[in-house]
Image (cartoon, rainbow, N blue to C red; front, side, top):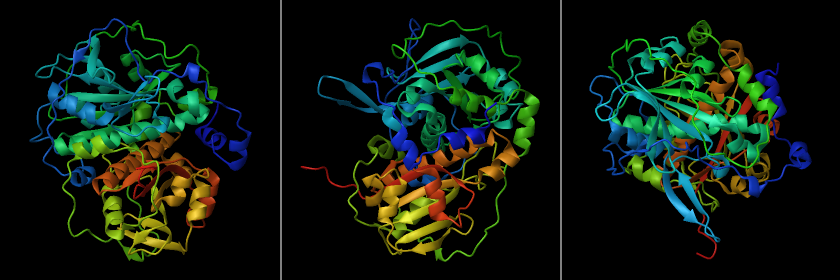
Amino acid sequence: MTSIREYHERTKHSVASIRSNQHFLDWDNQPLPFKIYVGLEPIPLPREFAPSAVPALSAIAMQTAAASGAPPLDLRLLARLLYFSAGIVRTKTYPGGQVMGFRAAACTGALYHIDLYLVCGDLPDLPAGVYHFGPHDFALRRLRAGDHRGALIEATAAESATAAAPAAIVCTSTFWRNAWKYQARAYRHCFWDNGTILANLLSMSAAEGVPARLVLGFVDAAVNSLLGLDTAHEVALSIVALGGGADPCPGPPPPAPPLTLEIQPLSAREVDYPLIHAAHAATSLQTAAEVRDWRAAAVSERAPTAPAAVPLQPMPQVPARSLEDVILHRGSTRRFSRAPISFAQLSTALRSATRGVSADFLATPSASLADCYLIVNAVDGLAAGTYAFDRERQALQLLKSGDFRREAGFLDLGQELAADAAVNWYLLADLDHILARLGERGYRAAQLESAIIGGKLYLAAYALGFGATGLTFFDDDVTRFFSPHAAGKSVMFLTAVGAPARRRGG
């Protein structure tokens, strides 16, 4: 059986692996970016959205709300959360008439392989059931009638937030929709792209005062079965318990026989990547007892390991831009201008993005599996060089001073974007430590938490008036570049931020 460590090693990028890869994009066989159920009636979602009162930067940094005083979940509130997490926020028509729908959250290759499902009890204007969210027509489709929350409670070994939630969002990935371009590395992208969606969902939930907790400990087969997934193609990745104060004992779930629902084919043919299935099997949990043991190993805070030299600098006035406006205008920056951002802006983005995640694999929201490293190219008030971020002390430790634009461009697969960015922000994880504590499933947690932080950085950058983009990297070269401080760590996620360049000819 393939271990998750073996998967990680075999999907690393290097100069040699990039040069030897003969993969090409078969555009005639490009998969649909949607899961479309044939014949199921849509339940249209409301589309009128007013900005929330909480500024974007405050929402990004907020922890989960308390259950007391939380607004009741209804179709309008669910529509807001779904739209600003995974909805189509704008379209572009290309020569030839092809229309591309861009989603609320960034996704590798804009291939949109993450789907969202809703499992809920009776809500004020939505009967209990299991639903699929269709971004293509902004509607729900009911897959099962009845209150099936008990099945999630059983699958999560009675995780407390799930047991008290009137609803839960289950995120899945359809492998082929991303592997068409990225091959076996797509399993990493499952968590990268789920993470950017969750950054939006958790921030929007905070802005609306809705308690939200990320749950990664569950019996995989039970959740996949509840959603009727063909696990040769699509699997559940994460659960978000939404709301609080529901009947903690909704009773045994109704029968959930296998679903035989017709789904529109994604493409004429699919290419299978066995390494993806092996990685997912290696990180799966089989029983409720395994889930309980996994959750009991939740990670606590780590003590600072070195004196930090440069405290973060607060902004004198934080922009009041709404989160909805930020999401609507967010996009992946295609060119940076090399103009600097301020240290106060960088500090605010760092502080907002790293305030913590309420998750079952973290003993407290201030705990983290990810370590932050920066290549600073152009920040007014901060010397160019490489830094490690000390979350506990909210300060930067200078590792090496100097101009590293050329190295940044090389590390990020030779991309000009990385060389031109003001800052390249890497999330690294000590996989040996994480896997020893959390087992193979810890790999999912490390990838997913890093992507949530990266997604929050995306939002913070746009709230502060500059741009951001996600990039990929030469794995081992990044670790060597930041060593000895980063020795033994693995790169999980990378976000480049900076001032966007004006469009050529503009």
